[in-house]
Amino acid sequence: MYTVDARGLIRYYPNINLASLLPPDFDATQRPYFLISSPLYNPQHGPRWTIPYVDAAGGGLVVTVASPLYENDRFVGVVAADMKLGEIANQISSLKIGETGYAFMIDDAGRIFSMPSNGYKMFGISAQEMNSQDFTKQTILGLGSVQLQAVTKRMTSGGNGLLMVDVNGVDTYISFSPIKATGYSIALVVPALELQGTSLPHAINRNSSYGLPRRQLPFY
Image (cartoon, rainbow, N blue to C red; front, side, top):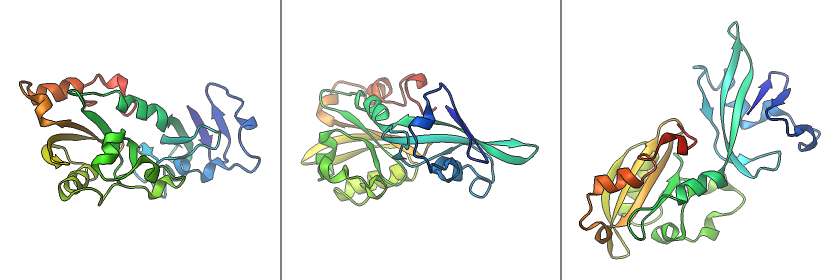
């Protein structure tokens, strides 16, 4: 966690000797988390989430939640916290349902935060295609079958639902729900045959991220 004042002065907790990790010309007031929290882009003064970006301190791809700080109605800076995409992906990849079911997560632009190899195959792409340096241009919107495109469109619009789609000739359930604080969306994918004799709502609530205790995910 850290604060950045209007001059760009950073106070980081716990102390990691941040000055030794940042380039000499680093200007925190020009970073995404500061700009989206400023009065011009955040007149409601609420917390804001960044899209993924490369951490200047060497933390790789991160997302940041930031909230503006005001003193007598005067904007004086932000307080923020970073989360590494790798850690988020590990939490999502640990979610299982049935024998081969899995979870994936995207943001409101269809950018992949976490997806296993079977998920990439479902959309007809390879992980290598979506792992270039320019993360901001990677999206699954418009990819896959017409049924899958309908699912991702609803996910990126903040919708929730349970649909059966044809995945390479296999009837497959896809359940999805938004994380409203961030605009992200999590989906569970499982072949219908693997849930025979199982109550689908019970299986989803037991295994999905929105049925897990909230303390296990960083978004609530």
